[in-house]
Image (cartoon, rainbow, N blue to C red):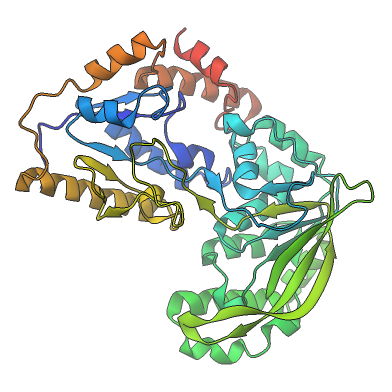
Length: 435
């Protein structure tokens, strides 16, 4: 069911669109960013308008949006971090993956991060795709990165980095690793690096291959090949030449970030050694009582993002960190919907989130069709909101304003042989947009 009489207005906190595609996707994954072309077509549709530089919940409340529109869809993602909850988490040299990714991807709020990369060993906690993105950025040759849209300040810092070894730590075993085969293959093939893993952590894994479903089987086969198989001549030569190393460490859980002698920065991490109990989907990690200390000067926690409440008027489940909903309908709030991570939690890839958003749109259209969403009254839409924003001194950025920013970023990138050089300062973005 589609309708030809619906006007859609998109409100975005920053002056630039595309959210996680711009600020979350790794710089060396330009093919993933091609989805921007689809988003641009939508934004340029005659019945779609973009209003950047508007903070929903601050510049305009959700209740005010509901007064102006028949339906409001909240799709603001997950900007909070799940914390480790261990002593030493606040030491210098400990970062969330979210902030580290924001730093190299040009998220304005992370431009001052300046991570200290003067140590030899980095430990990443978590074994999902984001953890592997971070590992790849830390270990990739600068000659590869300088052709991407990575921010120049991050590129300069990585060029001077002393990090030579990255350990990717998870609380469960090789059969539960959360990354996908594409990301693992990129690590295995990363120029100038070699895998360093503990063969003992893979005991009995080969025997389970027959019973695994195909995606998990292929992933495990690649992991085994990198970890314990004798490499061929070409691979052996690559490993012997490699100056940098990476490896998974399984069955480990953080207990404490160990401080330097001056108690200011991270000097290591204490890990609890786990064993697995149960089988299949019900397998869980249980502490053995053993501990292990790993010397490292950089700790990056990649154990998950979480959504935050946007407005007191919107129901929020603090435990699950989502907006409570049924098929995208926000519970007990007529005309309010949600999609993406704030609807179901921070899991899946861009395609997952797009399909999830299509589901919410279908739900909304069904409600119009059934009459449970009343669209018979006239609502002012963006005109009503624009009047409020003007009174409050807020100047929204249109899509054509964004195109000026886009054009300037592309121009700056061309001078450096990059696809773009992102602006990091909101004030500068607004200056270019209004020029």
